[in-house]
Length: 265
Image 1 (cartoon, rainbow, N blue to C red):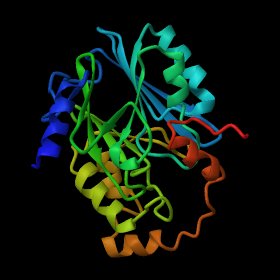
Image 2 (cartoon, rainbow, N blue to C red):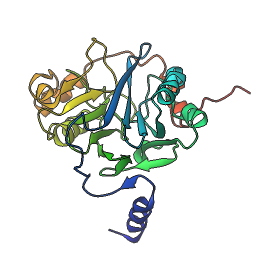
Image 3 (cartoon, one colour):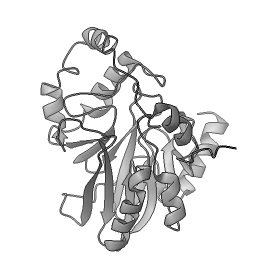
Image 4 (cartoon, helix red, strand yellow):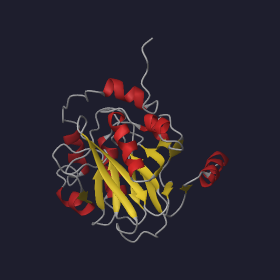
């Protein structure tokens, strides 16, 4: 480890709510004071996840959407939570993130994203970084391939994984834009997600078929793309011929600025 890397590691260890190294194992079950809400935005079929510690009231919001930020802030208040972090699993192309608006609506809320995303945020994460809220913790696992800055967030007891666009229910994120690479995505999912316990719940960033949750074992055995060999997976992904996301030209530039859209001059 060079001196620059060591200095950054020391700073991370001093950052509030952020630790490096093995995640704590205090959480034994979903019912041990953990609050989890799955929220939906219909236009982009995006799931937003609110996680809270019932004891301390500290909370994290994963993948908020601009149009539903007011709804999310209202729910945080109704549940008596203190939102510490608004987190993006990656720089989205199909919607504008709500992190920037939530920071202005909720005092003390910090925006979070992967350093490799190149986007602006209050806090940048890398593979293995730990984000804490109350007694609970999320481990950031780098899962590039859809974009360079994709992160999967895994609860400390490995009971839940928030996979962003890297792994969807019976599918995966596309790899034909934003630094996409099918081979990289294949290895990310197999090495960083499929190595989790089989009963680990999988919560993706999107679903277009009405599914809400899966498990690692289901996706390891039933995912029609990721049960292929790497070579065949690459062939499938390179021949999807999908239209580009409708909001990409607006969403990506805004999301690079934490969801702040440019005002026409």
